[in-house]
Amino acid sequence: MLTRWALCALLVASTLVGCTADTGDPVRLTVLADRELGDLGPLLADLRRDTGVDLVLDLRDSRDVGTGPAPGASGHDLAWVGSEALFRLRAGRGGPVPLSTSTMVSPVVVGLRPAAARRLRAVSARPSWADVADRVAAGELRLAVPDPHRSDVGLTALLGLATAAAGTGQALRAEDVTCDRLAGLRSGQEPTGPDPAAEFAARADRLDGVVDHESALLTLNASGSLDEPLELVYPRDGVVLSDFPLLLLDPGERAAYDRVVAWLLDPAHQQRIMATTARRPVDPAVPREQRLSTDIGTGMFLPESADVLDRLLAAWDEPTTAHVVFVLDFSLSMAGERAAGLRSVFGALSGTGTGGFARFHPGETLTVVRFAGQPLDERTVTVHGQPDLDRLAAAVAPDDFGRNTAIWSAVRQAYARNPTSVVLVTDGENNAGISADDLLAGLPRPAPPLFAVRIGAADPVELRRVAEATGGALVDATGGSLVDAVRGVRGC
Image (cartoon, rainbow, N blue to C red):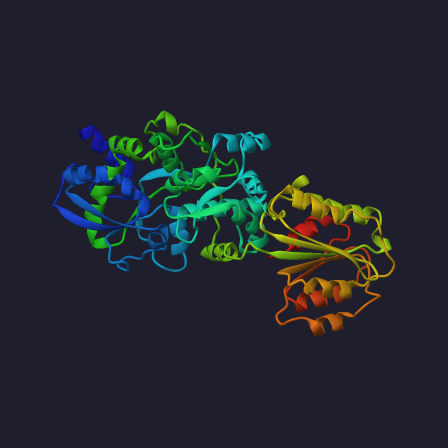
């Protein structure tokens, strides 16, 4: 017994004082706790017996627990949150950061039905968040994901997907968050309450998988409630580890806090936590059970500011029922290589190329207006599957190029379709139909944004003027990748 408590003292010496085997005076502490920590109930009775500290858990959604409780602000003595990193990120807005000690670990992962896992692993033997998101955006995976506003698991998953979507290899920045990259992800997820694993089990007949803590998915597999166990995917581009820190909100309860943390970090109790909850020991020296032996890889970079979280959630809330109108120049100067580039764009965004996160997604309505000296033809599809995308790709297949360039007449026709955004691609100057001033005079206020993609000799001054008047932007793709240009501005 003395050896065990001596080890305890060694483990926590950096943060604790007075690690002792004595129970001390009995004390009751109220704990503002993440709802999923309710599974610790069987251990808390033993903690009370051994330490004299009675922890009374007030179980709440992550949103209500992990928003940065300051000492004395919540009326609780302690807080027990899911993620130290997310807590400190939120607390970094200026509030004090309480003393905290990590108590156990579980990564946020993706659990897939075996057939869905085989489809995903055909893309990559060890899939990334990007691979998962690409299949979700294509309508090939439907996942149960908790609401990121309420759940740190949902927010963590969203951070992983958005970080992969940004493609920078760095922590997510506010400028990396774009609603067009998230819309496809949202279209393929089914929101759940705070217990996504349980809700997946209830709706498994219409879902391919679920995002949750490793511990929750292992517990679900062991419950026998599924026809076949889920396969767990640990994204190779990084996972977020929830380390369930215990926070001291009332400094006057430091002595009792020390006794609780010492008990929790004792190797024997770490093993009991592991056996009871399927969470990993926080101490790497404690042997892990076989079911927890999988290498979880590297940790994902987290943003440096909580403002990025605000931006991310705001983008997530954008409607997914977008109607984007593409206005495409088919004047004679576009024949050949430039027209081939347009077809490559639609191949990529339709999933037959490299569209990635910004691809066309289920539920989205898309219109193509081709024009030369006047609008040539128009085609609209609402995406339900690959046949719809094939029909859209066929809209850019014709080789009937025309004389002159009626840019603004074609854009006016696009705005008549009540779009959420318009994407114009042209290589020439307007020399037929209405003028830019005529167009602007007839637009609603505010107008949906126009994103103008310039190639060749198109007039950058006029294109920028109209784009910025609508809240859009000009992208110059001359000498660059037309696929990247259109994929980056197709709007929400």
